[in-house]
Amino acid sequence: MSAVIRLPSPLRPTVGGQRTVPIEASDLASLPSAIASRYPDLAARVLRDGGFDRFITVFVDGEDARFLPGEHALAGVREIELLPAVSGG
Amino acid sequence: MAIATRTTLLRGLRCRACGELQPLDDRYVCERCLGPLQPDYELHDVGTSALRSEIERGPLSLWRYASLLPVAEPPAHYAVGWTPLIEAPRLGAALGIERLYIKDDTRNPTLSFKDRPVAVALARAVSAGLDTLACASTGNLASAVAAAAARNGLRSFVFVPEATEAGKVASAASYGATVVRVRGTYDQVNRLCGRLADDYNWGFVNFTLRPYYAEGSKTLLFECAEQLGWTLPHHVVVPVGSGALLTRTATAAHQLTATGLVDDTHCHIHAAQAAGCAPVSDAVLEGWRAVAPVRTPDTIAKSIAIGAPADGDASVDVVRASGGSAASVSDADIAAACQQLAVTEGIYVEPVGGVVVATAAALARRGVIGDDETVVLYLTGNGHKTEPGELVLRPAIDPDATSFETAYAEVLS
Image 1 (cartoon, rainbow over the protein chains, first blue to last red):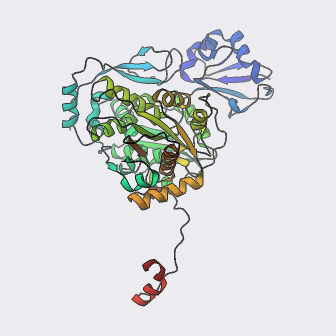
Image 2 (image 1 turned 30 degrees about the vertical axis):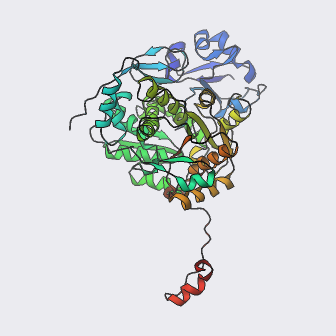
Image 3 (image 1 turned 90 degrees about the vertical axis):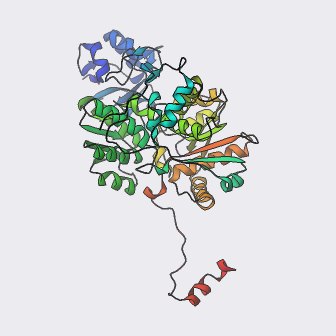
């Protein structure tokens, strides 16, 4: 079963206005290339040099992806959320 | 009541990443690259004397700097800012800093500097016709949002980590806010609010109103410069949570210089963090490396316990460009510094104030501060909203003079 990517409103126009889109990738390290091949308009906004841009925060079932290894398997993951890197008071 | 007229120098919102100038609408990140947006002002052809006069004639609040803010003063809000800049000779002697000043921002309406960014965010929310304010908070922001909403007849929802100090939660609740306590760290609360900000048409002050909100933080340095006779301090020690205050301190220094309000003197900006959550200070002290987020912050300085600061890398860049430095200080040093401040200057702060004082001590020990250089410490939160540290009190005495003199003979001698 594939996971879904949940997108914030500024990114939804890149996928026809949808809030979530399906994605299939074996692990975290291969997620950027999976996005690039399936959603090139989205990739153009969120990827840089083969990885996620620093202004994007990625959460895997609620866990900040920066704390997960690249080989973290995405099988069984329900939701990958992309949020603008806006945080803190 | 009419909204105060003002001279605005505002041009639009500019992306700090790609540089694109964008209109002042409801966007809160760059449409092109999702980078952070910051109001952009026309600074170079300003009549300095006229601007200075306008400021000096202005209200005794942060709105005296309305020309350098993105929105006009809201009609009904209470005064925020214009807090005292206090000479601190006894603390200075203890730290070995000759010309030490304290910017006592504990004296704002809800006892923290958060009233400043909230005042600007509130002004934007009111002008945009929003009926609800919201935030993710470590505590102080929750109080500031709740009070500002109450004052202006808005609803408020404040989201805080479950472990937030009871005094701060009680404060926010007393203003009528819906206080949502969340099982998790601040960063997890923040993620939740990032999701909700898309689903609810509320003014999330540190998300959807962030380009406006963050501007309020500039006004600390504006005030310090004016209170020093339109001069920048040589050093300013800034507590770092998200990094918004530190980066906007640099913005303020630039704007003061570019408008000619101050001479082009150098202001070293130093980052103060607790060792239990020091992503920025550690990056500075470990060779200006990229910020590595902290998964589980662990410090008594809960107000700045933000493991993944949005302005973290930008803060490192600011510190480096300004010729500043940083320290990460232990909880024991933080508690001792709070007490040192209280007994030398009579100012009672939350642990973040101890982080700032302990950082200043570390900078002084390292020889970072030269003779005759002015140093300003930002004290951003009052101690009365936090749990008191461990008190060692003597037993109660009978109400007679003999009991007093017997029990306290050692102190009296």
